[in-house]
Amino acid sequence: MKKYLVKLTTDERAELESLTRKGIASVRRVKRALVLLAADDGDKDEVIADKTRVSAGTVARIRERFAEEGLQAALSERPRPGKARLLDGRQEAHLIALACSEAPAGHAKWTLRLLAGRLVELDVIEDISHQTVWRALKKGTSSPGSASSGASPQ
Image: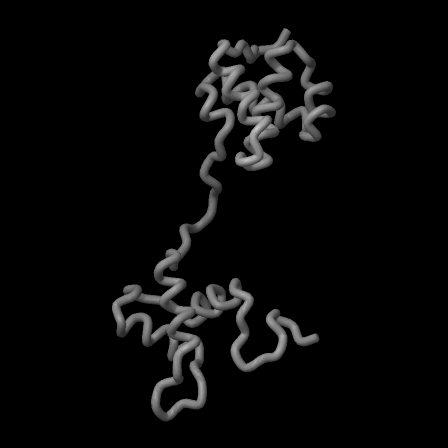
């Protein structure tokens, strides 16, 4: 006997069916909806896992979240662990614009340390290391001064 049974209301079922038919939700959200619909139909976890191509443990966790926290919690992502980002989108955009601008007088090009120092001078961020600047610039596809757009030469 299952510890966490899924019994959907008519409205919840309609919402899930609508979610699976529209092409605007993330794949993870659609898979969770499919798991809940199959669980409501009475399918076993192994059958649901095969149908939706997820593990049986994932099916069990989705059932548990639905039973304990409700439909929206079962469909949504939980925050992931890890350190918070040091630069938000606005700050990264400012960094990229700065890196693409003319280098300061007396320098042929921007260095990571110069960029970090200028960001602090301009009050874009309180404090930042050159490694953080490097990681932020590395995420982008632009590589000024290089013919290729990636980190490794071709």
